Image 1 (spheres, rainbow, N blue to C red):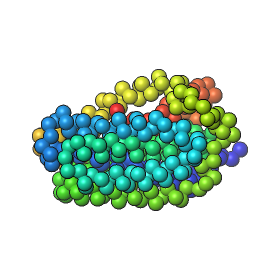
Image 2: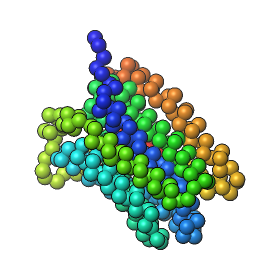
Image 3: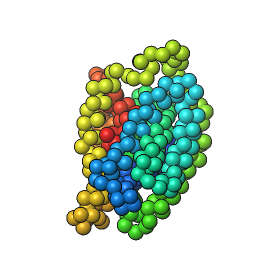
Image 4: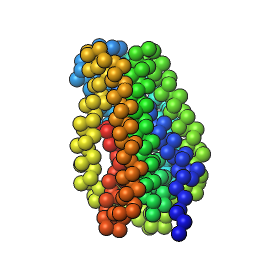
Length: 295
């Protein structure tokens, strides 16, 4: 029996879009604390707030977006989210003080939460059920590549360019993600009959939260909490140790180790555990719908 096709135009397009969105996130995450300290003479605590408020924006953006996607369509939500992503990415150029920078970071996180939820919803619909683990493993590699390239580019730019150049670069990348989102076909946006049957107009908490995903989400949060400290303050720490160039390669090494394991583990899941442990797919679904290293 022939395998269902995985590498379709829509799959590649949504993976590239997701990659560009994550690039902006990771690029700014490693430099924004340094920007707050150098530009506005913020304390380390305030710089941490500037970095972390982005995550609060993501939570607000994702909280209601999953329900809205079912009503208006994930493709439309993605286009709207990436458009707002451009606006908020460019808004850093207008930040004149710490309070305004914090507001921009929150709104940027909100836009990111909307866009990334839409990409996860679309890819979950277009991946063949028989290749779910393999497909999500490959799709999540777009995030892993961004985990390496984003911080690498961010640290390199912070060493050789003005912060305004960094914000211009991220705005351009956001604009490219917006343009690519139009390439996704309408067919990929259609909800399944099962999804349509679940859609209701009345307010129910189950329309916004999947309680079965809470245990694995807690595990993801704990892992991400540890990684976030490295992500946010590695730039400042490496500067104190005079190891800026070495710090940029930290993320490349991290990404290589994950890239080696993802295709293998996803394929193994499909071959060995699909029938025995169907709920294990929540791990991969959580990785798509949650920002793993963000917490």
